[in-house]
Length: 247
Image (cartoon, rainbow, N blue to C red; front, side, top):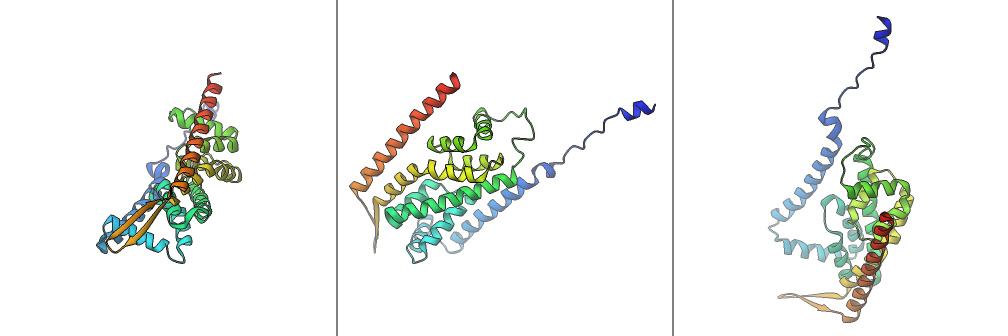
């Protein structure tokens, strides 16, 4: 009788819905509140989307515009604003050199925020169930990132994989931050420079009757050459990665 009682293994309690998803729901609630506040501001001031954008551009042209740009870029993952559009705006407003400097600072702070959110809210996402049916894409890169974080993040940046997806995935997997951010700085630089140059080639003058855009052919040409070169390198790298997996 005693032996039978001793051989019984206690059954672990099943986690409740809130225990499993509470943190993620809290993050979603925060994001919805933030987006709602932006929409409410535009609505209460009777601003059209174009007017709201113009107000933002005017603020970025102010003496504290650089700090505002970095702040917006840092908070960008929270409101799902496309990084490419903000980078183009940075190049157009601040020019080539300041556009590159401010964008590099802002984009890496943005990557840090997304990494931190992934680490905080989803740290066990890829560890809790080794038999998880996660998509092949995510599972493949997650395994590589665990094995060699720096090289994998660097390759993912050169391949132009979704910027925020890489950030969140790195946080989910709790890889080392120094290797993650160094690979992000190096791997994102070619794309960042080409997009800033594209933005800098578009000069917008504000007139009484509206805005008048103009194009700098030289800056635009350099941005195209750099972007095409980055795409060609990305394609070569992708073919090499495919060949390595096949072999």
